[in-house]
Length: 378
Image (cartoon, rainbow, N blue to C red; front, side, top):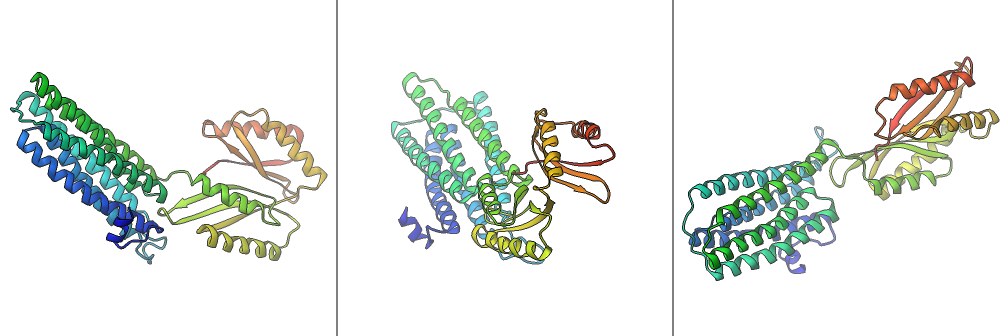
């Protein structure tokens, strides 16, 4: 692989270098295989082999789109897009998925027509050897592309690699149909083309689903969130951290927010000092722009200890409530504040709120309960 990095003049230790080199390699290999298969398919009148060749040409186009996406994503932020252009990669991934899907549909239509209007085949064992060799190359190329895509967080590369791996199964089907013709003189080429096209459609739908998930917004990266939580919770002055949100503006662009619990006796100046230092540390070490919300809490007062114990007693009986936090009493307004984190199985949030308010009213007469219900975003 070092030869390709030198050929494309890229650094194998950078994200851009990996995407550019992997895409460039995919373009060269797929174009070579596509031309070979289409020529062999035309000579032998095999729609299955021609279908594979057309798909390989589509793979080359997909690699071009992945390459374009990586280049455009590096464009510097401006007034219209202050978070940069990283999400262009997701749009390129969407185009790749559509290309795969459309190719599969067109090949399905062509293969179906061949079922009703078959043509005489002229397949040779040499053609089969070429198809088998291309399948082996595509298998290794597909695995490598998927691995590199996951390594650098590129859904476009993953889509290209998945399509390459699908081609291996398509080649096996083509080889089997050709052997059936050579041995038994049964022409099942069109049926093989139908199966191949269905595999392409399946790969296109899966790539489309994956890319749309990125565009719509996935949960924040769990591994990154775990590192951030550890960093935040280990900071002196912070008692707890909850409600983290991570927003993705491209594979290398993150912004986020998190609520932290801090002793209510701390001054604004004290809070500013350690939160500002933490914010800069997260920016430099994790490349995340983090914003903090502050909960003032009292962990030491006996009244608060009893209140937390009371709320914990309610939580233990709730199947869908995972935890609670931000417990605070406003003495001036006689309000009790509390936040619940619930799982996604809970559908009726209002019923939970009413149940908790009734529970608290029996134990804290005259107090107004202000409950906020949330889910985990990472």
